[in-house]
Structures are given as C-alpha cells and as structure tokens.
Length: 246
Ligand code: NAP
Image (cartoon, rainbow, N blue to C red; front, side):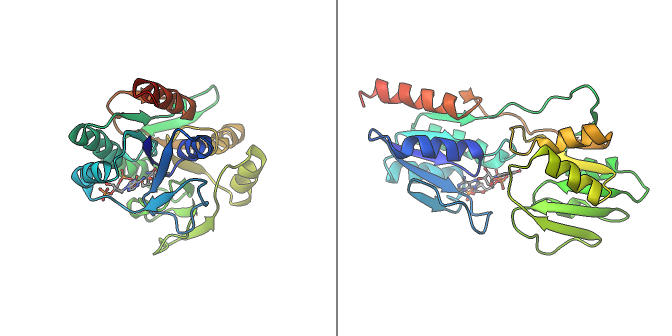
C-alpha cells in the first residue's frame, strides 16, 4: 500500500521509522525543503511543494497513493488545507496529525496573541531583550526597539537588526534552556503554541525564572479525521489496510 506522509515534524519522523520495517506499506515522506540539511529519513523521501491542492491531488493519482498522512506542523495551515482538499479531489483517505497544544500552568505569565504582528505589539514600546523562538519564516514582524535572540535550525537570511542568532535543532533540555535565558539576560520569550515535548522546556525555564511569554495561538485545526500523535496515525493506517485486505 503506497502511503504519502507529509512531514517536517517529530511525528512524521516517528511514523516513517515505524513504517520503515513494515512490508505491507510502501511509504514516501515529503518535506517542504525549509531545512537545509534535514535528518536523513529511513524511508524514500522527496522535497518541495506540489503546486497547491491540485498539484498534490495529481501527485496522489500519479503515484497511486492509497493513504495520505498529513503530519505537518500545527502551524502549517496552508499545507493542511491543501492536504484535505487534495485527498477529496483524488478520493484518497487522509488523516491529519495534530499534537495537543501547550496549556498554561500555575506560575505561567502568558500573553496569548493571534499572530506575529500582535506578538510584536505585545512586547510594548520599551526596549526589551527578547528570545524569539519562532523559526525563521516570520521574523519580519519584529523590529526596533528590542534586542532579539533568535534560535532556528538554519541561519536566517537576512539577519534582522539588533539580533543575535544561534542555530540549533531540538529537543532542548530544561537546564540548557534556563542557561540560555540567563546567559542572554532574556526578559521575555516569544513562541508559537507548537505543542509537543521537544521544544517545551523553554516554557518551564521561563516559568522557573518568572519570565513573561508571548504565546502565538494556533491557526484553525484541520478538517477531521484528526489524531493526536503518531500512534493514532499508525492505528488509522492499519485500519485502512485492513479495509483493503492488505
Ligand atoms: P505552509 O505555510 O502550510 O505551506 C506552504 C507551502 O509549502 C505549501 O502550500 C506547500 O507547497 C509546501 N509544503 C508545506 N509542507 C510541505 C511538505 N511536507 N511537503 C511538500 N510541500 C510542503 O507550511 P509551513 O508552515 O511553511 O511549513 C513548511 C514545513 O515545515 C512543513 O513541512 C511543516 O511541517 C514544517 N514545519 C513548520 C513549522 C511552522 O511553524 N510553520 C514548524 C516546524 C516544522 P505547495 O502548495 O506548492 O504544495
């Protein structure tokens, strides 16, 4: 059974690892190409956009894909919408993986905002030392008067003014996150509500240090069916295979 996994996430890598040794499935992992040197997947993979929902539908038909697992990031709203539309167009069963959002805990000082422009506004008019843990695609929303620490897998180009860049790939530990916040004398953290364990330690570090967090809320969730993790997607796939007698 040919399975397309839309990836770029921990869950997609987990699904790929699980399917690597499964003779019933012929999986292919798709990456957008945002990361310059992705970790080598254990299954066949391809890189780059499909050309919208219609391009993806054509790919599903041409490659005779019989199940689509959309394991893209919770903030990859365009791809998630395209996946749902393409699956309908090509009449291919699809499931979306959406990990639970992070929830506020006692001691958290979160300001929740709807988008990056509002995240910048929430920093206020006074110059602050800001840890921007949002990747590199939406840095343009941030500017003076603040000083930024930017962490991303690859170096942003251009580097925004008044910014220090560190390149790193998660997961990150609580000790390392606390040390980073202290060393750079961070006063406020900006992050997307990505959810998941790999990048959660920064929230606990901020809580421990009493630092405020500007939390960018998620876009609208994908169309059902939706599962919460890789195991859910694998169970869905096993069910699809059963129905086809694979
Ligand atoms: P997006 O805005 O929803 O998608 C933009 C376009 O990128 C899509 O229309 C599609 O191009 C292409 N694309 C996205 N994911 C793809 C995939 N897995 N395979 C092939 N093409 C893909 O997506 P994004 O937020 O830029 O995210 C891009 C990638 O980074 C995704 O794989 C996502 O899982 C990963 N990622 C995103 C974030 C985040 O915060 N957004 C964080 C971590 C990882 P076409 O229309 O031409 O098909």
